[in-house]
Image (tube, rainbow, N blue to C red; front, side, top):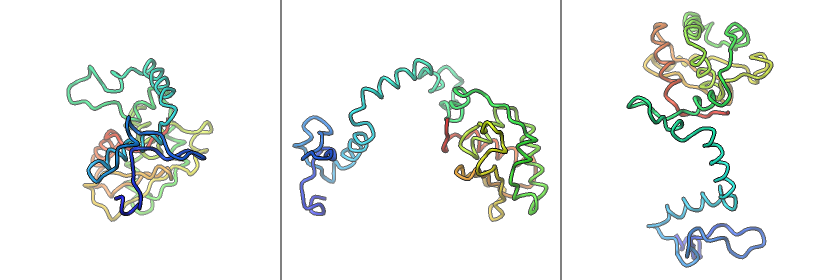
Length: 214
């Protein structure tokens, strides 16, 4: 590694502007050289230093205040039934922001439906499944596709880009729905029945993961 850099690499951060050397990433870091054996530890410390740096104490206060409002036991789903996962990002969003009231007629009216021409039955099933869902799962479908379970103050008409459903004709009914949150797009494989769509969509929205905005 040092042969590539033509210099010694130690456990120090990137120097600030005008400084000759960076802060130590751990006690004695200036005297500890980076090797093939410890390079992963070095990278972990370097990334943490770049992200936290001199605001570590401030972040600690922020986290402490957040946990006063949202205890760790809630985030970790402590006290729930065995096997239940921790609180997902979308669940946290709904706890903090409240459960939205979604107008499904407005949702459908302002949706760019790219499925209806190629597979009108699948399009109809999708909206029927949405109506079968309660408010929580409706919000989770929106969050899965758009990154947030809430709509703008002007409603679905104000979404930019508009909500869109697309058909993944090259996939099989065994696949789960996918989403492109930057485009507010939900992609559906060609399911054979409404129940199959309901099962696969429910699995997708409850699986956790993804990108969310609170």
